[in-house]
Every structure is written in C-alpha cells, then in structure tokens.
Length: 282
Length: 250
Image (cartoon, rainbow over all chains, first blue to last red; front, top):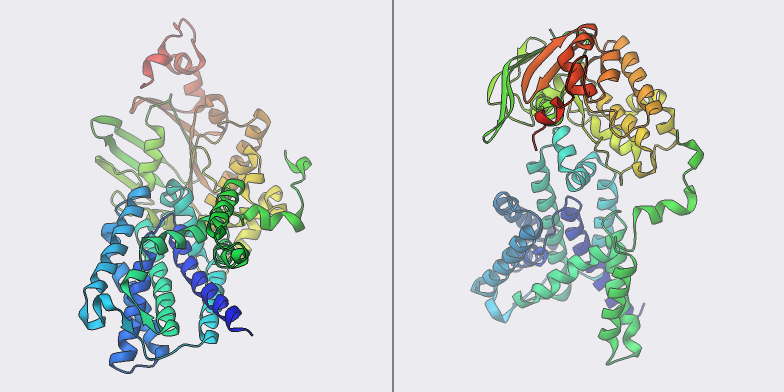
C-alpha cells in the first residue's frame, strides 16, 4: 500500500471516530460543538501517561478517553440545563476553554506543543476506528439508543414512558466524549505530536458537519459523512487552486439535495422492501 | 377501588386546572371523563401518571398512596396512558415504538412473546413491524399507541381522546377493542369529547366543567341529564344552546 493511501486511510479512521463522537449526542438531540475539546483531553492525557509514567499506549488511550468522560460527567449537569442552540454554544465555549487550558499548561508543553514518544501504527488506528464502528452498530440496536431517539423526537413520549431524560442525556454526552477521547489518544500516538491550537473551532465545525451531511437517522450516516469529508478533498486534488471552492460547492449541493443527510432511513429501507401496499390500509 | 382520587387539585401558576375532584375507577370498570376543551381532562390524566404535579389531594392506586411517586413507579405499578394525538415516533419502526411501551416497567430480557401477543391483536401492525410508523394510517397509529401502552402491562389504561381525527368506522373498531380488553380484565379510564361513543361503552361517567365536577353517574343518568345535553349536544330540552362556548377557556 502506498504511503499516500495509508495516510488518507488513517485520516479517514480518525474522522470516523470523531464523527461518531458527535453523532452519539446528536442522536439524543444534542448538538455538541465541543468534541475537539474532549479529543484534546484524550490526546493530552494519554500522551502524558505514556511519556511521563511509561504506561503502555493500550492502557493510556483508554485512560485518556476515561478522563474525557469524567470531564463530560462533571460539566454535564450544568451544560445540559441548556437546550438547542444554547447547548451548542455552551459546548462550543467548553471546547474553547479546554483548548485554552492546554495552551497554558506547561507540564504538557504549553503553546509549543507536546511530543509523544510511543507510536501507534496505521493498523492500530484503523482497528480502533473499526472497533468504534462495530460498537456503534451494536449500540444502535439497543433500547438505550431507542430511548435517546425518543428523547430527541418527542420529549412528551419520553415523559410518558418514564424515561429518565436527564440521566440518558448525560450518558449520551459522556459516551460521545469518551469516543472523542479515544480519537484524541489515537491521533496523538499516531502523529507523535499534539498542539492545543489543532483542537480549534474549525475542527469542531467539521466534526459536526460530518454527521449533519451524512445524516443522523441511521448509524451509517456519520460513516458516509467522514468518508465524504476525507475523500472528496483528495479526489479534487487535480484542480489545485479551485479545490476548496469545489469542495464547498459540493457540500452545499449535498446539503440542499439531501437536507435530512445523505444517508436516511428511507434510503436504506427502500430498495429491498418495496413500497407500502396501499390496499393494506383500512 | 383500583384508582381513587380524593379532593385532587392541580394548578398551573394561577390557573386552576382541576379543583377538589373525587373520582374512582373500580377493578374491571370502564369510567369516562367528559368535558369541553379546557375542562382539565388531560391535566387529570397526566397527574395520575405523575407527569403533572398535584397541588392538593391524594391519588391512591390499588390501595397505595401514589400521590408523590415517580412516573416509572406508577407505570410499573400498572398505569399506562395512551396520549392525546397518539404521539407515535413516526421515524422509528413499529417494533421500536412498541418496545418503548415496555420501558418504564423496567422490562428486561426477551420481549418477543409479548410483542407477538400485540401482533396477534393487531395483524395490520404485524405485517409492517419493521417499517417506519409513518406508513400507518391514523387508525393504525392509534392502534400502535394502544399496543405500546399494553406492553407496559397495565391494570389501568388511560386514554386521552382516542377517537380524535378518526373516521366513524375506525372509532367503532377501537371502541370494540376497548370492550374486548375490558372483558379480559383491563380497567379503563377514558377521556373523550365523543360523548355518545364514550357513554356507550362506559360503566360510569364524570362530567367536568372548568376543572370542577359538574355531574357524575351511570350512562343512562348522564344521557338523561339536561345540563349535559345542553353542553354537548348544542341545546337539549329547553336549552339555549349557548352554554358550551361559555365554558371554553380561551
């Protein structure tokens, strides 16, 4: 495999992990614009553990993810008092605060960045992404996931069936943060360098766009979104200076054409089930 | 008594939705609550389920005081609500909608036998169990909402305006279903604006007027009641026909 293809697949894998980190809270109706912040916690915490106490990467990355989850749990209750656009703003601010903290934290290099000595090869990154996808496929079949969907679609229904909306929302936020933390840990150990400026607003917006373009209705939407955002800029390399103009135009077209996301539940059901027999209705 | 409300009051800020209401539902009974828009009927059902807090009074279910119990405990105890407007998750499959009903009683493990029982009851739903609920007609959505409530294994099923927006033929079907479920031992508390239909299945009825009990009694007594006729049928014997709008809270 060429080094180029290998690099693109690594990028795709990290984007897939981040897409699911954003998709999980979104399936409960939370637009989390602070995923990069949780990713930063996973990256820095795991790098610190492998660098300073020589912990194995395979323990340090889960520990970093757990740290991201603990932070999400701690800030979850106040943050989840907000809804809709205010929740998006609150998570966005949280992401910026986390970035600023690492920027000023000299123990992990501050503004000059932090070199990571343990190395995760491409295969490790790919397998982690596959693991996250499999986890999400299984999770999407559980009643827990159904409850999140119920909360997103109709808060009254959630009340009627006695769902503990607060705890379920907190679980969605935390699980999303844990996945982002895994992504951060893998990122840090593959690229061997972390700098706080990387986890910025631009990254946060792209992560959410993966999911919104791919679609939140099914578990395959974020996968498609990550693929689109990774592959299309590469495929457009033939037109150097117009590359990002074309890319932006394609995003707009995709979103206008498929406003519910490219991959919808209907799209996945349609081909092999056929249409509803009209005569079956009373 | 299965359900017993004593001097129950519900208020939203300064608005009194229900005032000092006494109501009972006996084991195996169908009881209907009638009243115009804004009479407080939906608030009453929500309070019995514990979604809306009560400001005074007492709710007892099967002899136990549940006035301060949490909603999941009440559902686990055997109370289920089929909400007004059905509240089906139209993007989810029929099966997923049904599964939601089993949630609050804390059901774990294999629910397939219970789902199969619901599919037996509603063959229309069985055929399309893995399709999105948006493919169902209004009547089928109502049946799904009822099936979903049945999966909570209720002893008391509360229904809020189940006939709303349905054709007379479908209304007949679902009211027949209520009678069958009742014959199998399910107690029913039915809130309706379709007075005639509700009284045709009920053992007893209560009429609310702006949160207060106006009349109660057997269907025969209520049908003979001139005030009820005036309020619902647009002018009974000697009535002016102007009573109903007066009661509406705008």
